[in-house]
Length: 372
View (tube, rainbow, N blue to C red):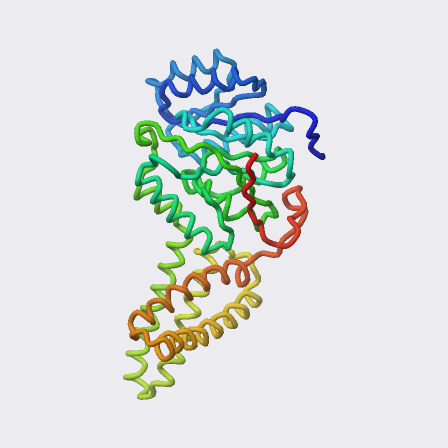
């Protein structure tokens, strides 16, 4: 159904809440004062009895309150909210906002209204990270933004924003994206392209209250979840390197031929790396084995040749010492190998009808930053 730009935006606001404070009630009042008459759905993510009065007050203000115990994580709460909106408010788009007052109501409304411009698009409220931003938040977003761009080729200003808008016909797909905690929102962005959805950013205010002390993000545990795909790829690559190294030494002693040792060790380590990446890193066990193996073999040969050419250029032509030249080469080819394996070797064939939205023209979900 085409969006009618002459009518008000029709969206529900979804707020996952874990141990919320008074900022949640203030946010509800501000949303209603701004004239939003659509549903407000709040998910109690196992906050406990101490916080029951806050949710009761929110219910008295006309919000839908759903919940579960114990705490299951932001991703689980969001998916519970999507499911509820599909049942109770069919046809409504959804704007997700945080419960701690760090999203301005004007920005919530703008992000929701932006959905009317481009069907089949995830709209992200992108913070500029200018001014007084906690160092942890600035560093975390920078790292994630760089890793996301290097692994997908899609440059986003703010990969960690909690202010996002989704069309109504995207909710079923959102319920199938894996992840139950903070890693879920990054998984949505990582899988959007394959599902045929575009990404669009619009700038919003950067608001941190009390140094972002209200966040429940656990720096190490949740960062590991967010970066899990790249971490698994790193572990798989290191394991293959260790196997290759050990086999070269062992086979050289047994066979007396360095060529036999190197070739056999590389074949064994490449096979282990391929199987690990196929099953555990990219979760593509359903992709044809013969097709993906042929592509992997071709990529491995290309990477090997590129390794030599780049190293030779840096060391022989530019005069860099061998150690830093080798380090730069390996880092660059590591990133390239991850992207190529994800997009070519283990990519599923896109099926246009799978999500109910035609894939974007061209194959890549390129984001746009729009001032509106």
